[in-house]
Amino acid sequence: MRARALRPAALLLAGVTAVAGLVVALSPPEASAATTICEKFGSTKIQGGRYVVQNNEWGANDGQCLSVSDTGFTITSGNHNVPTNGAPAAYPSIYAGCHYGNCSSGSGLPLQVSGFGSLPSSVAYTTASGSWNASYDLWFDPNPNQSGQNTGAELMIWGSHQGPPQPIGSKVGTASIAGTGWDVWVGNIGWNVISYVRQQTTNSLDLNLADFANDAVRRGQVQTSWYLTSVQFGFEPWQGGPGLAVNSFSFSTSGGGGGGGTTTTTTTTTPNPGGPSACRASHRVTNSWGSGFTAEVTLTNTGSSTVRNWRATWTAPSGVSVTNGWNATVTQSGSTVTATAPSWSPDLAPGQSVVVGYQANGQAASPSDFTVDGVRCS
Image (cartoon, rainbow, N blue to C red):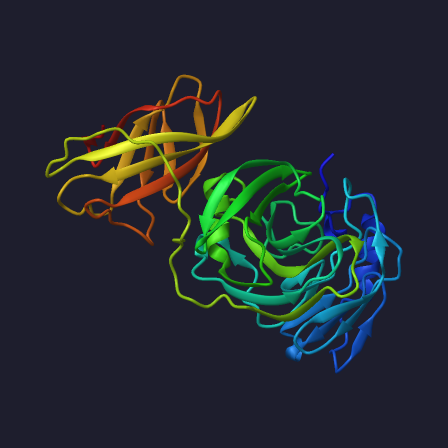
């Protein structure tokens, strides 16, 4: 059994207790030097309310306490010892946004995924003995003002980890984001959980979180119509805890419009003789289940001129119906699927590729008859 990384927002059996604990802390006090939190779901605000620090000892009763400064926190007590093949003992963390109605100020959240520009965030932290992960936790929901459990997706980014615990679900592949490699895990516990585990552990991260969200969209785990409601960073301890510390944390929704990222995706393509108006297309199924699947279509302009406001089509296999897409506006009429360029990236320059993701009902199969602006692709 793999570890289930649930927090009070994710703990269905203890939902009443978690909510009750958080109601008490809806208006937490501002932290001063050496503020201590020992309440299971206690919290406090720092930096003028810009961030919230929460104790969140939802999976144990070991008396976890945090010493909170104006830049982060340190776990000072609560030496946990829960089975490493189950849920963690807690998720003490610092966050921007709203979590169970407890909101920071000036975060820019909630923010719809389709409106993402750059989401810069950095964190530095100290590790200790035991079994734990040091991780971001990003929450997505169809409702921008969700006051309870998020129902869309949970995106975790493990910067470091120690011991046997693993993310929820199973490993589905890898990604190259922010100049390094990540193992990608996917599962579902009533909402989608996608986890990125850094292949080389570190004690500091400086990331554009939009890059991870865009990759999750391409994999069908996050929808562009959903809202990012909170960005959290903390620790999930199974064994140990004291000594783990967040030394600094920052998050901003600034950075301009767009939606691109630095994710590297590998696909297989077929030769094309090129020419003044030519294209190449490839198709890759990224995930499949009994009644549906997600896939990516990679379109490359192999011609010599830029395609303005590109428009692509392909023929879906019999029994396949597209339900949604990303990186383009994707629709279906009969067996013809049409993808039109997004406003934030309308042109396709010579040699440039675009990866269009989509989700469909039916058996996973490759489409045919790809075109870009009426030109048939090889």
